Length: 445
Image (cartoon, rainbow, N blue to C red):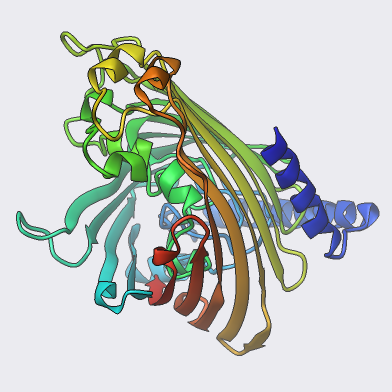
């Protein structure tokens, strides 16, 4: 409760430093936007009757919105960033079909205090393709290579990041089925390197929310005229049988360690998810979501067949003028894991009962000239992947881990809205050996 109060107070203080929208002004602006949208719809309808309009575009699934805070189109992510869309209608129409190509990549260099531990890597390279079969039906696919090389002797991975069919049921409602991103947090649907500050993604949205997080399932996405986007669906979930109590991966990200990634995923227990994002004021996003399920997956002789997990998050992002202010809180829980944890006594990493984290971030567009722009930023975050354990483990000496506190400050220099060079420095409160200078580059198209 104290953490949540601190977050709420910090958000309020941050927002108080930026100019507020006058109530009459933003209402008038919203009415003007609605009138313009209706005018454009009327024009499109007239063009369709004349046979002029080409098939609908398939935009990249995580394509940032061109207008912060605008009402999102059904089936696309919430409008929360200032970048240009990855795919354009003109490009698609010039090809004469519904094909859209997109992707992104990033590389980084990190030098901690111990120079011998400095590393450089191609973190991700992603190729995506979509196809619009009609103005109602499209397919989206993404193939990702992580850490440059994937083989039995190398650390990299090759994976299908997304593969789903989306069908528009109405102007404000779409359904999708396949492997797709979960609509939780600020980064999971907008994880391209041009869309976040810092060389690496923040710890809360990697260790607590396992970005990039996708599941196989079926979902609905809807929008309202007053700027509310909602998401709901049924998907695969996590599998507790993947927990390795001897591996540091279990403590780096509890959900990452049990994520099935759509690879022969055990599906005896399915999950329900729901999320809301309100973008009713230009430049402002307020949202949250929840994901819950059993995770025993009905495995034979499983010590904790009724084990459950839940992850919930709330977030906000506001972009008044040149400012970009954001905050997020996420909390996860495992329950009914006592029997399993008793079999893990003696190992360093039993299943935690609770894990959570939060961050605040501020960035400012200090300079812009043509396509060039400069954004200094600062972020403070706290996260704990094992805040507490089941009570049955207390007699065996297990207690919650200390909370890591991280300050990250740096700069993003954009050669183009979709090409960025980055530099930052990170201070770690609990483990100062991790303090590091980071350099990076990234792009999205």
